[in-house]
Length: 36
Image (cartoon, rainbow, N blue to C red; front, side, top):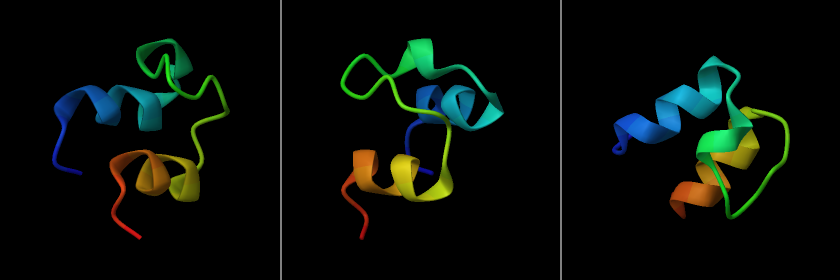
């Protein structure tokens, strides 16, 4: 996790991720980071 704001998504706050209002899934966060 390079971005601390993404950690909030992992904590269960999809609101911090305006690009993808999806549930805080590990794959979702990883894909949002572009770290496949």
